[in-house]
Length: 443
Ligand SMILES: Cc1ncc(COP(=O)(O)O)c(C=O)c1O
Image 1 (cartoon, rainbow, N blue to C red):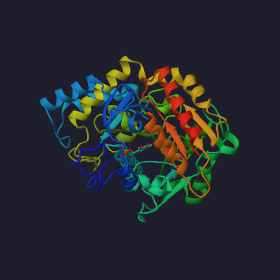
Image 2 (cartoon, protein in one colour):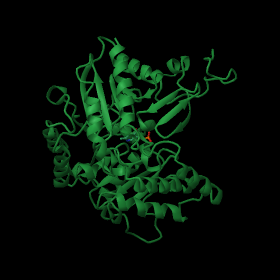
Image 3 (cartoon, rainbow, N blue to C red):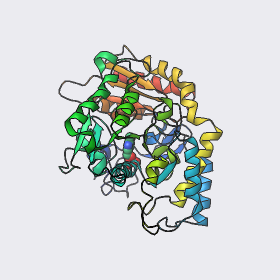
Image 4 (tube, helix red, strand yellow):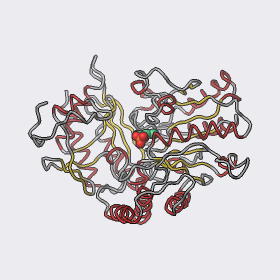
């Protein structure tokens, strides 16, 4: 393949099969990042790009945090790896204790994974095994939601509801059903904060209970706020209603907080911001500020206790990853939590929310803009699709933003932004200016 000018002539781009990427398109004009500091990436041509997406919703404390780098390098020298199967080392115990301190009350046990997808599959397995352990073994059905994103494992794509992530694979978990999504442009377009209309969409769960029988349903999994599908917010009262219905029927409620966790919506977890506590909560990404892969699943002591029966020498839950509680990842997470606490980052999104909101909503009235959504330090500008070319306009805006020095995400024609929680007002102005300019000149 012909190399672009920015690449070393020796560097082939063919071998790396890039994830969730239009490989041929990317390789014809690569966007190649080289270093990162604070709010900015620098690409291989020396161009500064303001990070409007915290990498991929993960670098909540900004880039290049020395404390994390030091903790990682110290740990890798001291002990690079140790198993957590029938062995232990102090760091994951310390980390679990620290995490429980900031977690929603009642979620006080932690199972470590390496990613959001693994957290989701772990949560689904805990839910199924828990129902069996408490003598409710017929509860095998899982309920997700349309437009949900729960990673790419077979469990995650089964409960997920984004068609492109499902349709090529045929095989999925049996016995899965979905709630309707909560995106309603007709009633809620341009709402500042949580939409007013749509709490009743949670009542659809009652219909699924009538259809399948509560005794056959193990769990419902939703993102408190759908991130990947384009920042779809929970209508006021919706999550509470889901909580009431699941509790009434003995169904576990799982919140997938892989994006909303660690400060994104203005509290450590969305569950706290919106005052609804699930039975199980999945996290990853911001746990280590994206520096080292790691995920964590939170459950209540009561759920964990249901597994603690039988002979003491018996493994209670036949599940885990070689790297569950990896010492280097745990060191990165502990250093990350220190930064979050010291700099007040887990609540900072609420302090900046109104400024962020007004910046985003200043784009209302521009051509193509059909909705703007925001909460905490996350937002989306929803563009009208071009006739017969869904996604084309969104991609063009995404690409032009990059070349103008702003990193955003696009999902179809929705532009999503979630800047590091260290963002200053001047950065917000810069991001909105670039995005506005790009939308203005996009046909
Ligand atoms: C809500 C949610 N769950 C799960 C995942 C999957 O995480 P990972 O890509 O780390 O497997 C994501 C990733 O964006 C996510 O947003």
